[in-house]
Amino acid sequence: MFQLISLISIIALAGFDQIIKRIVSDYLSENGSKEFLFGLFRLNYVENTGAAFSSFSNSIVVLSVLTSVIIFACLIYLMMRKSPSIIVTVSLILVISGGIGNMIDRVLRGYVIDFIEPLFMNFAVFNIADCFITVGAFMLAGYELLIGFKKPGKKSRGDKNA
Image 1 (cartoon, rainbow, N blue to C red):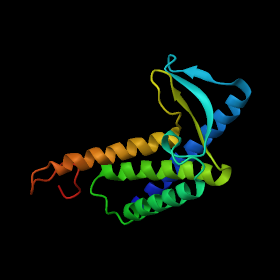
Image 2 (cartoon, rainbow, N blue to C red):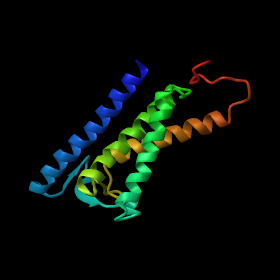
Image 3 (cartoon, rainbow, N blue to C red):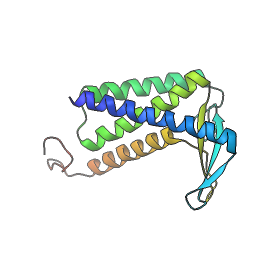
């Protein structure tokens, strides 16, 4: 049951990412850019052929292979129920979902659709899948840092066997 819920969550989140990208793409092609959230952000359609901050531009094959390996490794770890806590499980679901969302773009379009542009600082344009990956990675890193400082023999509240 755990695996089924995890897979449904991954599919739903990756699907949500694709739906939002489609809506934004259609909307922006007709209406141009649009500020939102009190002018802190702008919807700005960008076709990104690279990764974060447009690094590895025009390296679709390399990025696709690397993303596939990461997705596959995370899926195996998740499906084998090796996750020590719900935090790690949710982190992996987010990273996998975001990876799949961006992978779909790379494979079907040859680029990733980015559309969220922060106006309050100089930052890259990004998308929902990028948010999933970033939040999942930070959750995982935070969990690992906190557990790393845990005293030996003392179980944390997030551990399955606590």
